Each structure stands twice: as C-alpha cells, then as structure tokens.
Image (cartoon, rainbow, N blue to C red):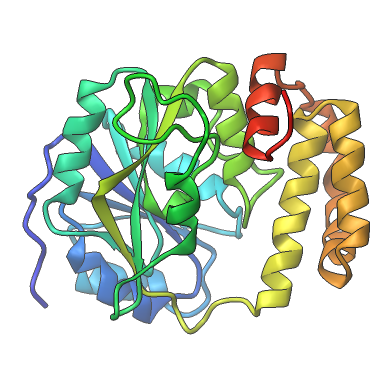
Length: 287
C-alpha cells in the first residue's frame, strides 16, 4: 500500500483514537502527512495486528479497555510534539493543510485549538457545524478566524502545552461530546480557540457508527457531566431540565450520567464569570 509523504513539519503528530474500525483505519492511515500515534480502545476485531502489519511506521498504543476520548490524551503524551492533530479513523487533513495549520498556530502563540473546515463524504459537503462556527459572535481580536468556545475533535489541531495544562480529555466525560469540558477549561486558563476556514479536514463517516438515538443520548450524558463539573448551579439546573424535556435521548443520557456524577462533582470547578458571559453570548442571551 502506498505510504503518505511527510509533508507536515516535524513538530506535529497525528493522534487517532479508534475502536473496532479496522477497515476504516486501513483506508485513512496512509492519508496522514505526519507521524501517527494510534490509540486502540480495546478493539476485538484484530485492529492492532492489522495496523502493525500494514503500517509498521504507525505507533500503536493498545489499551485493554475502552477509555473513550481519554485515549487521545494518552496519544498526545506519547506524541511529545509541540502540536497534535486529532483525527478520527474516518477523517484526515487535506493535502498540505496540516503544515499550513501548524504555521498558523506558530503565528498565534495563545491559540490553543485550530478547528479546520470539515468537508463530509465523497461529495465534500460542508458540515453544518462549520457555518455555525463561522457565525460566532465572540470577539476574534487578532485570531486567524472566528473565536470559539468549543470545537470538533476530529478536525482540531491543538497546542500540546495548552492541552496538557488543562488535563486533556478526561475519563469522566469520555465520548461523544467530550470537547465541551476541555474548551471551557482552556478558556478559563486564558487560551484561545478559532475556526480557520482556509484549512480542511475530510470526514467520511464510517458505516459502523452508533445509531443516532444512542449517539444523542451519549451527547446528553457528556453535557450533563460537563455541567456538573463546570457550570454554575443555575446553569446546571437548566441543563438537567433540558435533558428531561428533550425526550428519550435526554432522559437516557441522564440515567447513563448518574454513575459518574460523584466523580464529576469531585472535579467540580465552576467557570469564571467572563467565560459564562461568553457562553451566554453564544446562546443568544444578554450577558
């Protein structure tokens, strides 16, 4: 199989977290233009052996169990490079764009996360979340694009210093919806995030994805645990009420969150007023 060329600078690593997506990985791994660390979340489909055989240049970290998004934190630590590009097993940076994104990050030393434009499927449809990010009302100041208070992990280049300063992805929230807690902590620590339309991620969603109802319940679980960890009491109550009102997905997410609430509360550090004001601005509320 043809191997990718190392077009990106040597101070960036692509970190991929995956579980039971062997076929997707064997297709996407050759597309990465930087060294790759694959963290395998306890796959049972032979992923580890298949990747080691087909791509001996990839660093593989096999885990005994599924730790969710925290696998990316382990991958970033193993990478050891100043910048880490996250990708899923079904996403990859457009040719040359990872190197371009690194140069943008170098030019903006307080930029912790660069979120690329996401094109979906062979038809390269713009992901609707990109239009939402492009309309962000947050002050951009000298950022290379609209300011964010969240991001999409499979399309993000992160500054490892900032990522590790706030603990990376954690074992409480896990996946999906893991980005919110990390984004809140980065903003609290004074780091910035931006959407940069001039660099692109291709995302070809795997056919082996969770059904939409299960995924939505997972997002509600993460939202509730993040709220317990970081939001003021009034906002936490609003998220709880929203979960109950949202129907089956929200109530299922609430039930799935309950076992992890004690751990979330042990790590509770409410965001400062300035970050809460940005959240309310994004929600269209008065500050």
